[in-house]
Image (cartoon, rainbow, N blue to C red; front, top):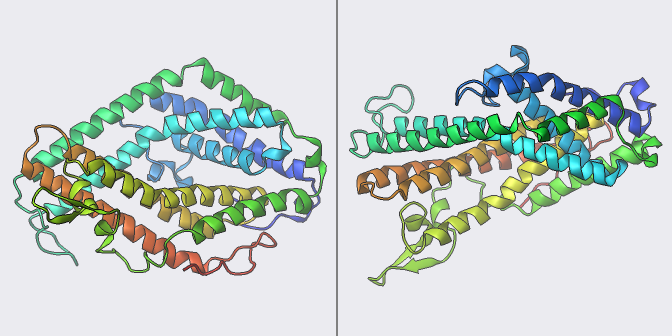
Length: 382
């Protein structure tokens, strides 16, 4: 990622030259990482590295799957933001194929991270002797359902990883992937740019990048940041959806009762949570697009990278909560096991709230502006 404004020579280049230079670099990263990613996929299930692991950090050198995913995201983001500068059908087809590869390759690392997150949370909650600031036993210490809940989660996530691994093995040897590699080779040689790309960067690229930032600001304005202004919202599990009434006539908050345990309101509770999470997931996508748009223009995206990491944690915690809730609905498990999974579900929903709080703390202090990247401060959201 470029941390400094464009050099003088770059500032005199046309928009097409700047964009081609960026795409050539990313396509080269794609083609270099692809053989290694295919080799990693040939290993046993569970060995694809997590994107957040040291194995794919810049200091540790290239790791196929992580490097490939980074290149795919950046190329796809550039084609989305600056798509009007390319042949429309080519750009749309390329984005669709990159989305396919991204979804395919991201599954197994995501499942690995989810497994580590859930099992670590359960181990912490059921620990009998913890040291440090959070010393003392966990709230599930000695609970008879904890070992069975852990085994159930481990078994279900291992099965999901094995299936994802098999899908990767099948697709990474397909003609579809070879066709996508040919597209990336074209980018390394000469991107299919249209005539408007011959204009100046300030007149062609910056306005389109500003649209990406405007979309991000608009999406953040729609977020309930005021509701997330306190860390670890204790009432988060009770504020969604209408109350449902049990046969006894006593009202029970749908979210507090049914998100984990089965019942008539389980689907409603899941839908309420999904609707509550959706705007945040959308902001996560827009943050990435804004980051990559800035990179194309040679601007630093360090602040947006911090937001990106927070929203990645938000999505991982939300997905982990869904996994815990789904596991709790496994037929024929004991009430004790379901209870433990319910506690893990609530723990992950609190992690969701913590990520929202962290986002709300970082966002108002951000500085936007493609003119040197240090412009007017981002508006403080209600």
